[in-house]
Image (cartoon, rainbow, N blue to C red; front, side):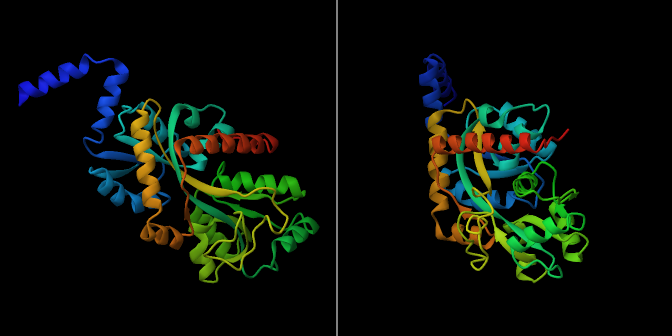
Length: 324
């Protein structure tokens, strides 16, 4: 057996590089796959953990979710970038880490869109404008009118500087001429608690994070930022139909891999992810979290990421939004 294996490896080593890569990718996966999530546990890694068991079943190897937080996602993404490009290390990242960081950091250790390989934009979740129920705000047009009339009175809770929430609110303020200062927090739970307590009246939250407070009556939802109304909040209008936004804004979550990962591996990963996203139990679990599946090819995913990078780069420049 050992002699046969040595001969086989010797023959493989003697093949041209392109042929060798193809032969290796045909044997993929040959061991467990590490799925790095560049954030702390208990956040959007939930989506990866929902999909991981089915990925394991369909690929025939364990898929292990590995949280690597730090530097707004940069630490985890760098680890993927430095990993062998053999399909056994992949990334499950968020819009902020993948496309917004390059717009807001003065110095970035990598450009995720250029330096990693897109596999699939897999999950989306709208943002939702919420207020403390004790406020006079009943609609988003009403909020805009009152904030404009009383510029020194109102503030909004900012879960994290440089997040999609931050850029969307700052762009909204700029476009509508609003003076609405931010109260920054070091995470969503802290920001939510102060809105619930009435310390800060307004917040742009993710639907997945805020739905429990909305359902429990602790938040009043005024509008969602997606193109269509959310199935979880069908009575809440969209910002587009209210005429207050020019495009939809959604948080999104995507699989990526080291840049030189063989195309056959990228394609297979994409096929499996899309297959899982079509399964009713997976769709139901995502829907319960206020999220939705999004099927896409690697090429479509890359084009989408580049467009988002341009869009949020323009927003960051217009609002002079930077993070050290």
